[in-house]
Length: 141
Image 1 (cartoon, rainbow, N blue to C red):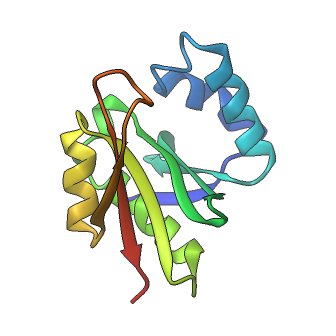
Image 2: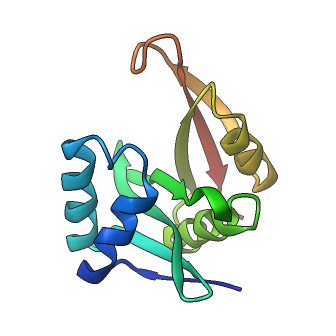
């Protein structure tokens, strides 16, 4: 069973450990600490251990936005990503739109978003060389 709660200071080491970018980039480590301090980071727990995290902001033109979703390698394909994304859907509440982006190369995330009712809504070129960012939208029910 997956439970989700706000990330706390005590979770930061586990978040850094599961995030391969945070292992090598100080900017990501600093961002995780900021997101947790701001209440924007939520962790998924499976069997009492951190299995993933999501960052939910209003940073996409002031609208609800799944800024980052990360699932530990050994917890993938076990419903953790879906649980975290659905947590953002709930947090978006009455907002008419929830946004998310992912790279063209991230087929797993694209599949998850499609399964959860997100539709492709555009593309942003040149953020990552040779790997455009796809924009997805989920309208409120």
